[in-house]
Image 1 (cartoon, rainbow, N blue to C red):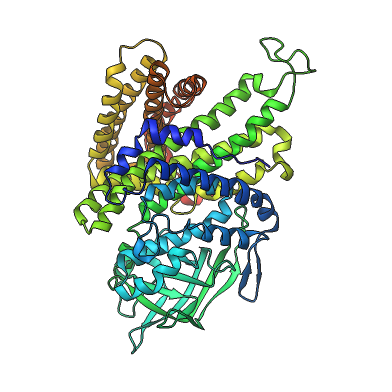
Image 2: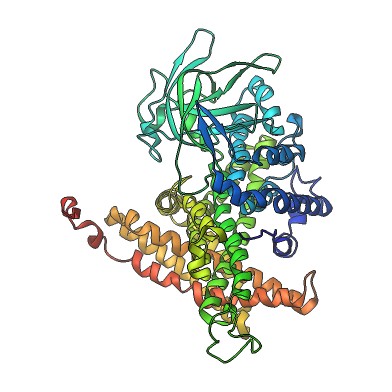
Length: 606
């Protein structure tokens, strides 16, 4: 099993030398306490917790899985103790208000924490992770009484939370939700229905679980405009904050999954459960999706996490395992064969994993700064600021979630490939990473849904291509001073500049074609998403390379070898990965007829 080591050198490089997070935090209303010393202490403390507590439970948790009996779920051995240590460390309330017991640090620090925890043990991380969505919803839309009742124990980690959306007949299309909410004379509601795929729906880590549930009022309009949102606790809460009677909500089963087996994914049955409305009637979906951008960035972290962990498993194996001689001649003359790392094709795989992991980290850390400003807008009650940064973040979100999880899955599969047949064997842990990674392209909106959101909604409907123009302008501004430079930097700058212009031109062509053929959006969206991801990652690799070159010349906090490797990894990305964008560009411009001309009945094979 890969021995996880938090990549603190790369994290600090991005935080301190690429994105200047110190200045960023100084400009936030809740950034005063996020001093460089505090941030470093958080990184070190979280790294220790992840390396020493969470990582050792990753393999055993997968092997044991969760167990289910009479509506109760038992998590794998060691999870309960690890969660208690997590709570004792104050990690759950890192970015939540002090008035509810949190530390009120910027949201981005929570993402840094999530990266390390998720890479060390994604299954475990889902338990506290699901609570964040619940807390965010209660904090923004709950009444004062609801906040005072639920926020303190959620922020401390004493209680956990879930988000209950999906039903057997609907996943993405939530307009089909059938769960009922019957008003009661005392102002509460009786919630009746079944939810599926509910992560952390039932477990033994906390004394109470607070479900945020989508349901319909009796007189609700059809479709998405008729959905309301409710707080449904596992145990009812007395006025003094103590736990009361068990509510009529129970886990009906555990889903039997391919991966993340230590995470309890449940079928939840609500049988007249007592619920409390949160937000306005029939506007539950709007409230639910308020923090969807940050939730999807959290899932994008999974793409980074699996690429990183797979790389950490592949690299030592490639250095230790010996097979044949390198084509350019003996490299390890004292051994019977050369190490795998001397073979160019193995290097291709290793560098792909590294380029994706470090490129993804840069993309996410950039987006995290926008999330900080968005959350600051909420804290200040500044709706205009919130909407401004939510819109900015909204452009990045489908690319991060869709592209990075697809690439993370690819890197997990590459990890198995580096190991050869041993990668298929459970004892090495590489197939475990691939199984865990598979869900990332499915939940929180499949890759196809992210692609439709990007092209159909963000690019065509909401901005008429403006979001692409804005980002392309940023790309060209970064590349322009280096267009006539020699060496690798000049080559990469010119490539990035050309891609920025091409992205604008391709977007215009798709817009014009879509005006004549509505199927163009659905037919082109996947390739458009992947193209956008490759180009955007190229921009952030150039950014890292430029900083590395500057530090090589003037001196930096890291070694010359570190900065040289950065530039070399960027070169690999531009030479070997960015050209994939060409295929996606060609595919998205193909006519829709080759997709749509076949009769539905002719898809049959018998």
